[in-house]
Length: 405
Length: 233
Image 1 (cartoon, each protein chain N blue to C red):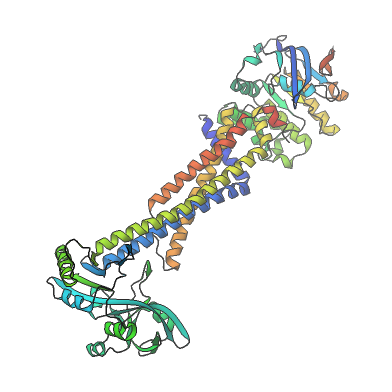
Image 2 (image 1 turned 30 degrees about the vertical axis):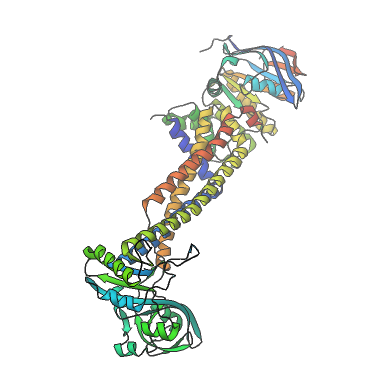
């Protein structure tokens, strides 16, 4: 049998950890919470991101969105979409362009919706029938409005599942009267659930475009025009056709900026991705802070335990332990504790991520990077924060350590 | 390895000062002492005479301020920390007044510890420790923790630990200070037996009855040797 001082030190460190379980557990706790937080928060960040990607790509790769540009007054530009330059006539003109499969204008606003003694604030979207085609929406129960209802600007509404749950609970909403901004509407259909991406996609009400635009808001412009092309190859062509058409219609001179924008789903995806990466980074850094705090906890406990065990170190030195043996024992103790904490933290993090995705509407995506990253981080924390107290312990004069009270 | 009358310990003009704040306090001044192999030396004296300080220097736990200390012919001042650790491990066995067992290790593991630091083959450790504990009458207590043992039993575990690497010298600092009279007799009998098997024994005590077991009495007063008496065993 060979004698390996490292193996001996591992065994000795292990004995010392096992024989003082409470101290080891407290030390580990910081690391466990830190590693667990990193994994859970980052997996939530990735989950949100993958959900958004999924949702945007479910829109289809051949979706184009026309939005009004940002308004500029005295050189200050407001948010995109704040101008009121798009009209229903623009929509009708765009619809006549070649290679367009379907197109739909929409107008969106937020209202309080009341049914009985319950109320709920949600977004009300005025659309034409084609909106369902463009957005891949389908009606789960009931129906969309008829052409007659549309033309007569009837007060009918198709509600999302979240709205249905909030207002009606288990009751069937079909045929019920609700009040949107105090106007009575009849619920004629419920939309199929689309899930959660960045915001709840089921928390909305669709109503005929004409009703929302004229009867409720009393305006003449539209918020956006969404359209799909016949295939994805003609996207660029259609995009520039729309740009030319709208520049002519809006009488924009050469050299002047567009008062609208035409974006495809890839552009939107890119914008969303940069937003979600920021979110993930933000969540990750919060978690990283807790990991550092956990590391400081390890150093604290190691320092206290060295002081507490000064006599033990003195005895060990009197029995012939060298500086190296003492330092290795303490270092291995620190690293073992932090590695064990790291592993428990990883398992807990995976478990909690799984719980989060199965118990809440958030979905989580567990990736290798935060697991590997936080594991190595906890090893390094153990090394760094274990080294200082270990050196302090190993350098003690044996007689000073023995007489320590 | 050592002849009958070889010098094991040679101290020449050993001084040790401590610092209390900025003030230098001499504890030992000009101690010169030679101990041959196979002697049983007791170091006696009133409290504060420097007995323990002398013992710590002899045991390589502390370094003198000045003077020369040759242990088995080798100048201790010239040894590195590593070599000192080796010396403590192989050449000296310590027995302390407060036993100094590691509280979280069993009697057996306490005895095994010096073999771990001394790089003894793993397969040899357990049998050697068990044999020693049995020899000292602790066969039934091998797996017990120090807190489960009486004072006398703890001191016997400590003696087993001191003996396990078969050192030439046993240094006992008030080994009976915390023991009742029966345990005191047991421990002293063990030390006498060890002396008879050829070990060199240095015993610090302030009890004359304990010192009587020794063959030579060195009496310290105010950091100096005041008497050095030998008697025939």
